[in-house]
Image (cartoon, rainbow, N blue to C red):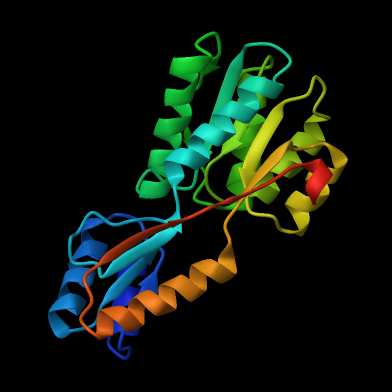
Length: 230
């Protein structure tokens, strides 16, 4: 709801808008109001269910979730519990990544036990607390996937834990904290968004929408980083 209020203010003084927002009825109502005014809205990373959007660009969350599952299933020392962190249950990309993550394990590695997902609001402090709680509740945890943000908190918790025995960890975005964690062996893989291409595509999409083009849906190839290629 707070995002919707800021979004309303932004849309009132823009010809077109690109946003990352949760799929909430208030957000959808604002998108529909702006579309009626002739202000096209393009979504980034997380899609919205309203048909009023002028386009979407991001990475394919289904492929991201299955890639994370593949990495954990292949690298885990043995089958066991696997934890999942999401930013919000209303971010469609996190929801689809989680569904696909679980789907991979059902199909290919049913001997692993997937725990209930925990929302960290993409906040490092909450991610830190959630990870420590997961490690406490499941001392035999073998893997964890952060499908959203707050990865600094996940990394801090694994460092505090000592990560022994090793918990295979996969998270998003190559930033200084995740790069160092890869090099130190604290996390095992990072799924990265090609940010420059994302922005470039979003701008082109907004310009096309202003010219009356039909809505487009573009999934960009994501980047996969491990310790040996950062």
